Length: 434
Image (cartoon, rainbow, N blue to C red):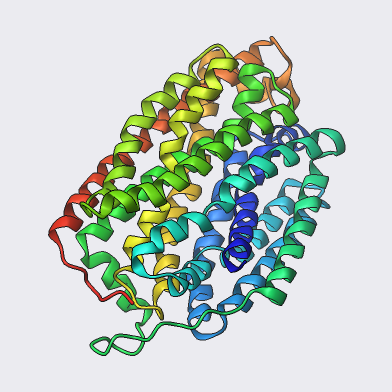
């Protein structure tokens, strides 16, 4: 029950992050904005506030009941999500995204801390992976519902629907979610680690340094690609918002479902024989999955593109369970929320902060080169969505090139994860894990 509620919190945190992707084409047409602005709205505007708020919220979770902190901030995020449906300008929408980001900052680190107190070290990777199942559930159901609502009732009602649903989940957590007892601090350790102590633990361990770099590269590719994947299906394959949302949900939802379970349970099983496989399995997956994803991306047939992209994407979601389990193995139960917050701060600042706007810049630049004229002036808003037009063709190819380029970061992330696995085999744990 507790893990299911925490997974629900994670699900709505994920929906807040990717919601712009589901309705990007409709927002772009109404407010006459570019792919770069979509990237800033979907990525940087959210990531900066989310990352800056995550550490103070994690410190609150170390001092007060994590259940209250998590549910309370989810309620705040849900309120801003609903308010976004009433915006009448791009600037107002950005302000609501900032509020969503602040509240959303409590949906990962405090639950990570609770789960590590609920399960022993040898089962944490699989437990975190079960918590992460909120992501594929949100991707499967949320993407389809979000696209369908936007297509039938307008993009503003998409925000309103998920805002109300998120508030209901927050209230259920306030009522039913119980605070797990914190595990005792080892005798040889200080009673409580300060934020700086956690930072030093992260920076002094070669394993954790390589791990942060690897996960950040995968995050850069993932947020950059996913922010524009529904738009890719609309521009390249001619799908409407509901159909593009369904295609996006099938790929990201099924991939994250399969990848999360494989990463948690599979890596945990292999690590019983050789602990290098806890991070080595996700490393190998990322190296093999990226070329498959790019192959599907360039397939002219939607029937071939979706399954190939799905198979490739499965490998990108195998890392989070093993990563958090590795991180928490170096921290006690009074520092794990802060450790997760710092880890996620770097990951989201790099991934969501830079990924979407950089993909937008590459897309706009390549589209302009392919168009051969004043693309920004001639193809603003809905002009680039007219089927068969020069604007539409340039916009589609520009986005395809941009997504393909950023898919390469999955391979780079796999290389860093390989180094983390090798360093972890040689090192001893920096801190006892309770």
